[in-house]
Image (cartoon, rainbow, N blue to C red):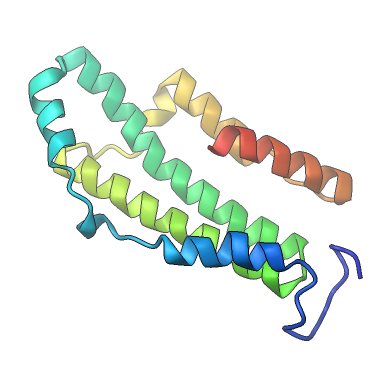
Length: 157
């Protein structure tokens, strides 16, 4: 069976690497924002950055939180819909789930730094352009899906 052919049975996996190298490794790397100290980041913010730098870095951090949401949506809505194999869907759902963890972590840092305008990054050309490019590519055939995955991978990470 091909990559795009449906398989109803959960196993045997045709593409076990999506389970072992994708889902399993991500599941084993799970963490929460409550487990990571951000004290050195907060100290640097308060002691090393001037107001102009805080404005720039703050908008980038706000953009990161939103970008993680878009990355999660891509994995859980697009990739899951394109590939009917369970091992690929599991990997994509795990990747999407991890991106929500990242979004919460950035949001936690942003709130700690008193950055609350989550739309501010839309007014910064570099981050707004990156975000627009990230969400613009969707494939509607196999070639388009391949291009979408390539472009998305280049802009998302």
